[in-house]
Length: 466
Image (tube, rainbow, N blue to C red; front, side, top):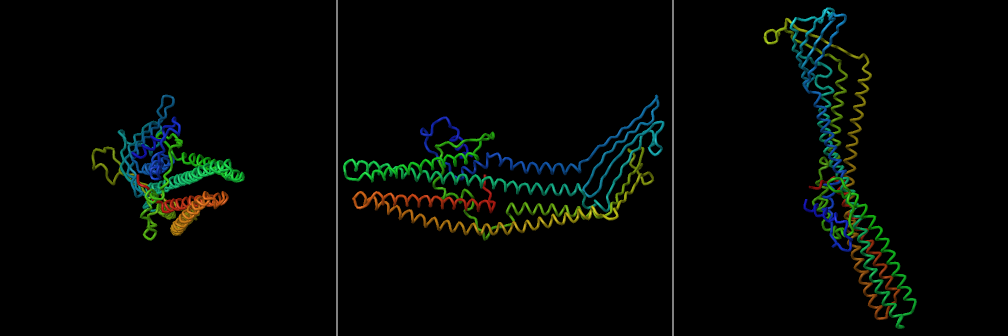
């Protein structure tokens, strides 16, 4: 957290000019930690879990006890037609059962005979049950099980979303670093061109060099200035791209200040920043990948849905039994002699709707299973390809380093010959142009290496610790 506070402190002083500030390096791990802590989309990713937890709470509500009161009264021309009060307390339980207690008190001149009850009311205690359809699984049971799975799935999806944000943020950092390194190359060689132009001009005035050498030196100087200006604009654009990922705690965007520079030694700590230093594809457990785990939870949810659709093929047979009493405080008043019971049976003749739902549930489950298998193969092959790519870029990096070193030696030798009068300005500029070209290639290869490591971080869905 101290690192993030330091970065925030450096970013806040926008009122001072960049010339008055000391350059401060923002390393990759510091930057990624800052993004993970404050970026709004990362915070939005946390809402995925909150959303699934709210749905779980909603699903549990299907098993909440309920109090129901129904009061109905009719009075006309000073006559009380009826006065009906019905109160109930219901407790739904897991396996298609519902316990309930009921009280009803009805009176009136025109009350239906079946609704009449003792003067002090009638009490009932009983249970209703689904014996076939809905006994071992029903909508509320399935919704609760699926909601629990969705919470676990949401955690995996949240990890994938955070991983995606950090991946995109790292690409912006690498682009920022690339443009910064390119600008430094042009700055260094602009200084050489300025010194060479001044020396050539002085030699011309003294009669030691022809005028064409002065013209060539000035052309080279202006080319260096042109290239530097292009590199400067690219760096400004890259800095603004990086600023898209820099935010304060109150969701306020921050613009990167000119005195903050990238870490030119990123290659030394990138594996630690991405937490891939100890990554080994041989021992990589595919089943722990957030994408695969998310799909597994999806499959489990679809299995529950298929069970529900299978259960819907059964006939509906609901039974209800209630003990009746007008003196509920006497326990023995509830007995089998006074009761209210009922049976409800329903069976569609063709079951076309139920059979259609069942087939659709099987298709969805097969689709999710195929998707899971394809995802495993895709991730596995991508990791293999990325490791091959990383090996290649590491080798290319060694080659280009040797080429840069050799071109640097050639340039210094050519410069010595030039000052001894044994070479021309044309050859010096040619050697220098090849050196610049090679250094820029080295920067591109390094950037490609960084991107490959970022792709490995994304493909393996590696989690960066807080």
